[in-house]
Image (tube, rainbow, N blue to C red; front, side, top):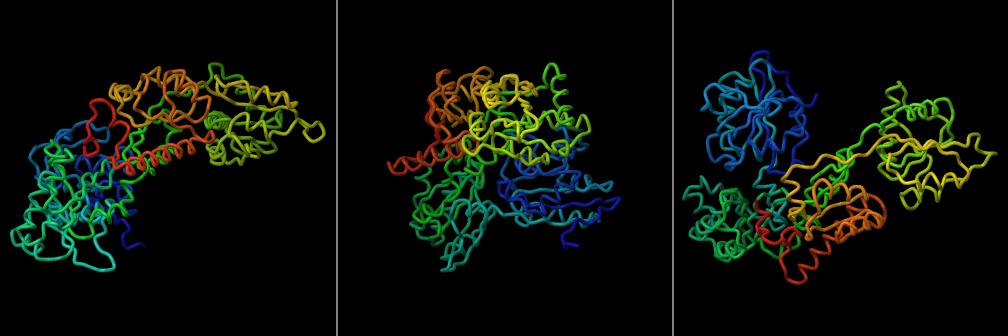
Length: 570
């Protein structure tokens, strides 16, 4: 058994896991942390930490939120937690004694044999209150364990492109400016090592002044990073003597965000020329871009993940809802025909078609074995993957263009000698074009063109999203079909002219232009992943052009009238 395997919770005292949630990027959670979260009965954390860990918790887990007002979250470890209890549906529950401290509440949550995860930002060993809560658990006989996390003082510089050590070696000192004593400043001021300072945005200049007073040279390089490891991350490079002026010139301060926590790295390793070469995160092609993905939730998942890999923030807005056909009898007859040997081929042109047939199979108690002896065709990589997940390997996928026309290019003509059956089952949407049907008939096949599902316009998104679409709050929109163009404009309005419009192919681009949109990006082939790649390439060229011209790198949404220049720091 692994030495970190979950111990059994006691029937009376339960069990508490003190867990480090890292500096903000959910991808930095450890495997052990994910395991603990999946077994938790209760989560105890600040609002921002809950956003990082909630995805890995099981459905129905109880939540204890350690900030009563999420809109006024104080930096981690800067004050006594104000605690409210929230159940699995985020409905406030009664809490006897509103002024309880976190340790008391954690122990109470553990009673009755429940597993509690007490999650903190960064690492529990560096949290102001975690040790006190552990001591309280020990005194009360509540068993606990500690799952370390990536400390902000280490993770944030790594994402900012500021290595804390290299082959030359150097001491690394960590200072919390909020609690540092005069002696602490004096020691790091006389050292020539790297100093990592945890502070707030409006206190950076004061911390720099402390270091200069303690002996550091004013021309010592300094980097300051806010919202580290997230797509809101922003880093400024300066020196101890110029940082105040740098932040003022960048219009970063004064700001209502001045109380936000930052990580400042002092020393030669934070020099601007080094960071220009090592800034791997903020230089991603779509870093911080808010990209609208107007697809169904199921279809958007892999595309959104790809966009995140480019540094984007995908926002999924369903424009199409998929519903069963109004008259299911035709589909039922076709599925029975698959079993009785009526068809030589079945052709799937979308993931939704695969889903519709699979659901009908399950309704009849059938599985992938019913496809034995039937040739299967699929248009598109995602459709083929959906079939493989069903247990069916396609016999034919277009070798060229992933479309009905591309499928017809490779489809064999009917041959009465080699083809014992001349019929093709084509399950598809109610609004599909006739291209494939006509082409198969020309090749000598009989086609059962069956409505497997209906596509209807989805409900309008929330007012905030509609305003962002029309007001230029999105940096880009990905259109994956003509219907997504028509439906998005219909339910939410036309995207602002600063928004980059990316289309999957010529037909979709034509529809976008007919709706008065300027098409900036088009996929080299009709694939959602190629479309995302094309947008990333556009973003990379746009970034390179700005740097070459000596201009600041901005997002498209920052060009709209009245846009806040400092938007990425919020």
